[in-house]
Length: 70
Image 1 (spheres, rainbow, N blue to C red):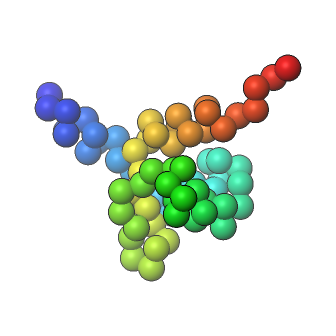
Image 2 (image 1 turned 45 degrees about the horizontal axis):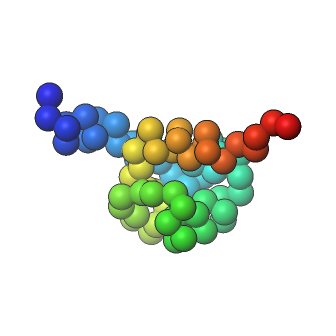
């Protein structure tokens, strides 16, 4: 299967609120993460409410953002 097909299948349209719930942060912080390019997304949807994000990138961001236990 070509690589683009796998990427296309793993893209998910989420609202900023959906991403905020998954990351357990305020929706305004999600917008900041997108603007500062700490969280990659591919397309801002209508009115900037929906973003197209690769699920594995969101999971990687969640993993990288967790504090390390001492």
